[in-house]
Every structure is written in structure tokens, then in C-alpha cells.
Amino acid sequence: MSRFTLHALALGVATATLSVSANAATEVTWWHAMGGQLGEILEGMTEEFNASQDEYRVTPSYRGNYTETMTGAIAAFRAGEQPHILQVFEVGTGTMMNAEGAIYPVYELMEAHGRAFDREAFLPAVVGYYTDTNGNMLSFPFNSSTPIMYYNRDAFEEADLDPEQPPQTWEELAEYATQITESGAANCGFTTSWPSWVMLENFSAMHNSPLGTLENGFGGMETELNFNNELVARHWDNLKTWQDAGAFKWGGPGSGPDAEPMFYSQECAIFFGSSASRADVAANADFEVGFGMQPYYDGRRRCAAKLHHWRGYLVGFARPHR
Image 1 (cartoon, one colour):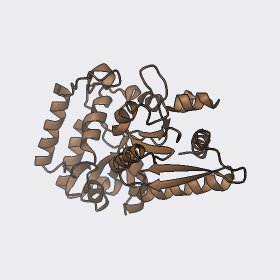
Image 2 (tube, one colour):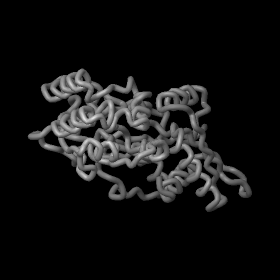
Image 3 (cartoon, helix red, strand yellow):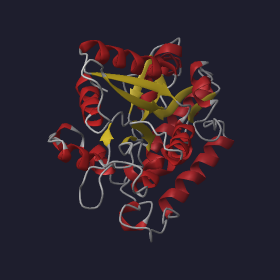
Image 4 (cartoon, helix red, strand yellow):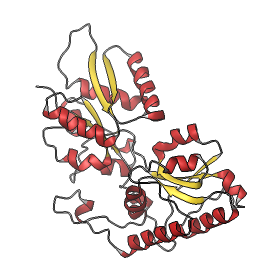
């Protein structure tokens, strides 16, 4: 998050808080789910902002993983002890959108206090995810991320693959993974974290294939899932085939507790994970890392313009304490 963004967030919330004495800074509490390297970066940004002025003081508080943070915030709201700012991952977007009275939609907050919001400052996919069907911004984009391909450049060279040319299609990826394992450059070709997010949600977005009706659920509660289609079935069948052949290895449910370590240890030469993992990858990988896009199936239209399934992070504003 840029310094400007943090400043805008603090101002927006501060105007909604209780008044304080003229000699005291307005305190702003911020609950987040950024641990590890990202947590350290976030703490540094907050310290820099607090040191830049004396009107507001932001106090960040790490509240566990994404689910724990949102669950804790819901409990705090019911007890009347909610934070001023809450960071929520995209899985919680629907919950937040329907939590009337619990959050202060950012477009209302900024309009009420004369703050301009420049939609053009953000990628369309990010803005689109956090707006209602009327185009109103419900939350302030914070650190939206997307799945990317991390690959071991050393393993590529050992397998006689060009480290400057990562695979662009799933067909190419299967060939690369097979060549990697057969050459002995690594025990497995590729692994992934968050398979439902990477291999279903973003996979569908890359191929312009909807997950559900009614604008993928943004258009109403009558949404029906329709991702059980030929394209998705084909891909998951392929994942099973590649796993049986040793080209792919599943890292476990959720974030995949073993996925990143398998990449760090060089057991797997390719790892699909969030762009937000880059700080951890840089800190833990003892080899040269390359980066690439998520692949697509050859012959299918790649739809980069409609990647509204990014793993976004929702920064919600709590309603003012009454």
C-alpha cells in the first residue's frame, strides 16, 4: 500500500470517529491479517505515516489469518467493540456487502466528508470487484493480488529449459513439468496454494468462464453456481493425471501448508501462489526465482481484461461508535 493510500484511509476514518481534545491525536484502530514479511512491511508503513504528522495515530493489530480476522470483527461488532478499519479478504466480500449497518460504505463516507475518489487510480478489475451493481465503491482497495507463477530458474536450466521463457499454456506447463521430473531437476514439476482460488476461480476468469449466474453473485442472492462445465472438468481431470504421473503435487487444503515449503526446498520447480507471497518467496528461496503469468489452454481466448476474480482484500470501515 502506498503512503498516499494509508493517509487517505486515516483521514477518512478519523472524520467518522468521536471527537478528541485539541492536544491529542485522533486514534484509529486497524485490524488486519498480514503476518510474516507482509506484516513487517505493514508495520513499517504505519510507523512512517504516524511519524509524518501529529493529527492522527493509526494502531494496526494483527488478528490472525483472513478467516480469523473477519470472524473476530463480526464478534466485536456484536459487542459494540469493532475497530475503525477492517481488512477482509475477497471471500468475505459477500458477507460485508450484506452486513447492513456493520460497515460504512466508502463512497458514503467520502461523500459525507468531501473527499474525492479517483476510480482511474486503480485497475478496473480491482475497482469492479468492490463496487455494487450501481458502481458505488463499497470498500477502499488495499492490497489486491492475483495468482502468479513462481519458478526455479536453476531447475529450468538443469532440465535444459529456457529460464527466460516460462510456459504460457497448460499444455506447455505439462511438458515442462515432465521434462523437469524426468531430468531429475526436481521431484515434482509444480504445486499450488489455494487450489479453489487458483485452479478454479482464477482459472475460470482467465478463460472468460463465469462461476455463477447474476454477475458471478454480485447481482443478487438468487445466484446459481455453474462452474461444473467442460472446461473446468477437463482441467481438474488433467490435474489428477499430472499428479498420478508425478508432474503435479498437491500442497494441502486452503493456502496449502506444504506448497510454498515444497518450492523453497526445491522439491517442486514451479509454484502457483498469490503475488502477495513474493516477499516470503524472496526471503526463503535460496535460488534464483522467475515469475510468470497463470497459464491458459491453447485455443481458448485469454481474457486478461476481465480478471475480476483477483484475490482482493477488502478494507471496510466500521460504522462510527454511537
